[in-house]
Length: 117
Image (tube, rainbow, N blue to C red):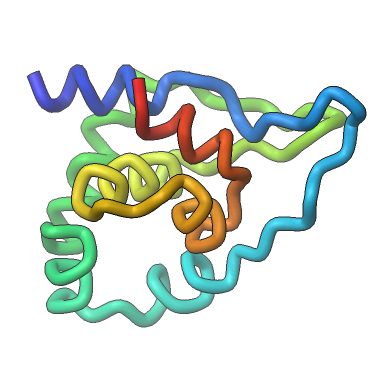
């Protein structure tokens, strides 16, 4: 049941661009430079409410069920691990979509699509 909910939360396309084609620069510092390379298991547990091995296991389970996103002229696709992290972060914390966007380097509306179906 939970796995199906996570799949439905993550199934949408990549980042959304405003109608006029403008997209703010997103900074990926926290996710790419802090969490992925440096978070010890206790920080994963504290922040994501699960261990890194559990998180990676969820990613491996979801990989066949989620589409491979392709790069378009407007934006680059969000990697599967980041999509899963956004969803888990939203479920684990009472964060606003704006905060999720800043943490993961995605747009506010993309955070909404990833975590609020």
